[in-house]
Amino acid sequence: MIEKRRTTKETDIRVSLKLYGEGNASVDTGVGFFDHMLESFARHALIDLEVSCSGDLHIDAHHSVEDVGIVLGQVLGEAIYPVRGLERFGNAVTVMDEAAVECDIDLSGRAYLVFELPVEGKVGEFDCELTEEFFRALAFNLPMTMHLVARRGRNRHHMIEASFKALALALRRAVTPNERIGIPSTKGVL
Image (cartoon, rainbow, N blue to C red; front, side, top):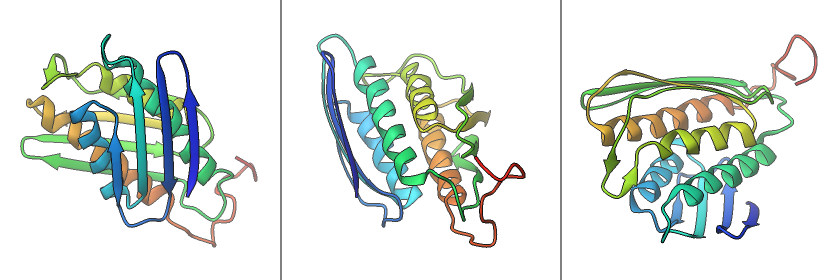
């Protein structure tokens, strides 16, 4: 288990992670829908994940969601890098009823996010715009290149949940051990 804690004036976060786990999760951010998304992510990525966050929810969930993305990205980066003997690239399309979301990632050490998920409004009390904030914080703090693109969908809950599941599957595939690869780059270094 790798653990990291981050405390600011806005949030106090602790994340523990086992990259090759069983998909167990214990998540408490105070943001119910976000907790559900992180639990789903852990389950489908087959990582063991513990997240606790005490944030300034009296303002809104922005700081909590973004800061969890920062810490989760840092912990994943510590577990993954340097990339050696891993597939490096991963992709998945996940469907949830009418929604289909594609996630493509590259564990390149280069931070980039393409986010094309047309979600606005709320799911329960969760501001849908925070979905992009989370994925940006995650991608830039891991760091990795991530493209999240909705192929279709109308229901915000379905589209957001499909995006977390698609990332989970893409990550699981990218960290698949393959010793034949060595350092997965023509440069000889990542």
